[in-house]
Length: 282
Image 1 (cartoon, helix red, strand yellow):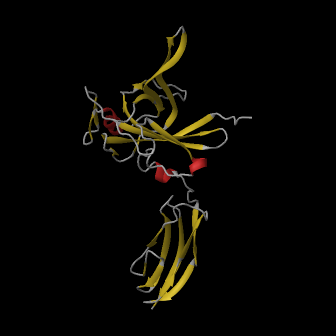
Image 2 (tube, rainbow, N blue to C red):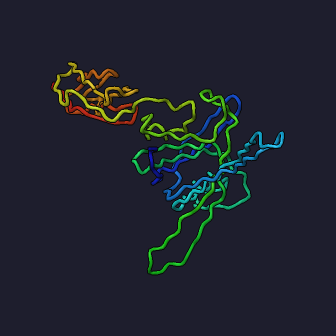
Image 3 (cartoon, rainbow, N blue to C red):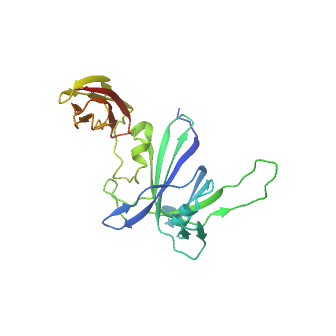
């Protein structure tokens, strides 16, 4: 019996400007948050047409056009709206100017999930936003309010990616299979070439959790990353007060001055943390 599920839920709407889309490169700018999202719908302009030879349908010609992504959001901040639609915003006066413009290309990211609890991460790689529809109504004693609806027209990249050998419109990753994490996936735009299979970090612990050393003495803090088969087990060590103690990249703590400090172990994948309390005596 096939697995049966439906999609339910959407969140985390972000975008990033496409800086270059060429045969040689596909580069993007910094990711920004757009607004709260309540619904995303996609329609693709596509056509299948049969051609007849020897009195029968012999081949099918397929043509695929742009994707029309309809996004229902909360009110988009005016500076963000100006940025993504090519309008003008004056931060000094708070003035938004609607004007004739040519908006740039943007990548669009969000996450959704299915009724089985699986989470899906999506990056649509290249498209343009239109000026959003907006409704304003008089206040009354009800709770009605209006957000905005904006359309994102997605197209294929010019750049052809190494993994597929083709250009792309979007990627969707089932996190239950590849176990990528949101903190890394949406920190920058992901493409077919940047998403790697593996096991994500779920936590970290340290041992010992407390240590007492004298000035110039050392102690070693060991970080254990979970799960054991995590793909990226890299950990960064940080001292909360370097006048009390310092810590090396290997977790070796050195006493500097009398006092108390905390040594924090932070995973590169996911940003999970654990800490050890350090006391330095004179």
